[in-house]
Image (cartoon, rainbow, N blue to C red; front, top):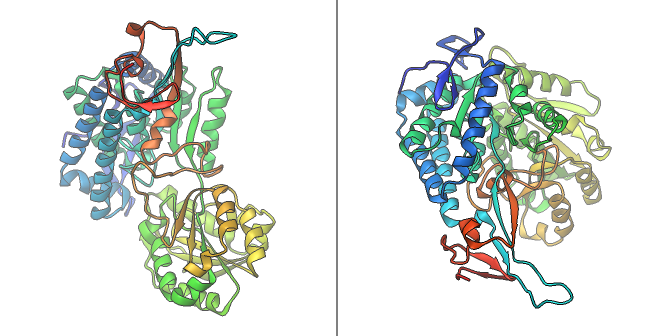
Length: 526
């Protein structure tokens, strides 16, 4: 592993012109680590954006195979990072070694997955409607459409996934795959990690001959506004709080040229407990749900923060078991002091509110988070109160007891947009659940049956998105190969000569991809 410099990355070089610095901290103890990072100045932010803009026409014009080789090279460099790197990430985040090793595999794996997407070619969305000069009353021109990268993308690192949602995470991978250079804003909670990963990306770029500004990285608090407002930036990827995501959306919308912000922000991920499932395996469900709530100290976007069941003796027993399991869970260190402070404030906001009962959980002491369990009146959901809709990022969940199925429907209708919703059900429960499924389809990006939402597979079919406030744009996903769509736009060529068309649209189909030609899918040359 190379020495940690703490300098910003601009056009393949390093820059530290500012005097303000930030300190890396040990997440478990709060102790200062021996690394300082130079906060980017406005001029450095501008230089990073301009470097990405200069790289864009060269990078997007590269054959997909060359961009795929770049992504594969990044994956190789990530896999080659040694145990000293893993140990540093663990100190910065308080996450265990196994989690970091697994997350590194996921991060390199999604790079390789997007490389496969590039070689497959379907991301281009090639469509051809050939000329019909004989058509009456008006001839049809030759029309050909494919997709191209939007331009330089600003990506903001997430606090909870120092690898998979950060420097070389899903947003960076999707943007680079789309042909978009990246300016990455490092998260202050794991700056050493960010530098090590940025070094890996730069090494991969140099080995594969990428343009100098294909990847840039800046440090600092408050520098994100300069980045989002820079005219060279054409899209934003963000994973974080609702407040932070909304601020970025407002900045981007206020630009002279508004740009899209793809922000993943807030979700309480309801879990619905159906009657027969509780009868047959209520104790098991309580145990499994507890494990999901406290996994990773509850620091997942898909943490199950709301549990809904219909009043019954089985639900009462389930709640008793759940309380017992939650009470047995140990406190855990959180990612950083800011995350712990937000968790404490969220719990304090719930405590003492009318309609909210605190069931389990010790008072928060020291720098570790104590698991918490609450029970809430169904009317808080039915009346659309915001109290239960606000995500508490940590190992806590709220149980809501509804009187019957009709009240369950009304409670679900009061829910805002979510990343996930889960049905815990037996076959008999599902027999008349079509209306529940139809309602949940309007509320969430991913529906689970007899599983738990804390676990997001990186694959073609995954959707990690959903209606607001889960995300700022429900049409996309930040996990899975469909994530590339966020950074592409369609371009139509009318009556262009073959030699000036992109390879995806040329008559000979040199890429050998499937194309929609005159309404039929084919790989044949024209």
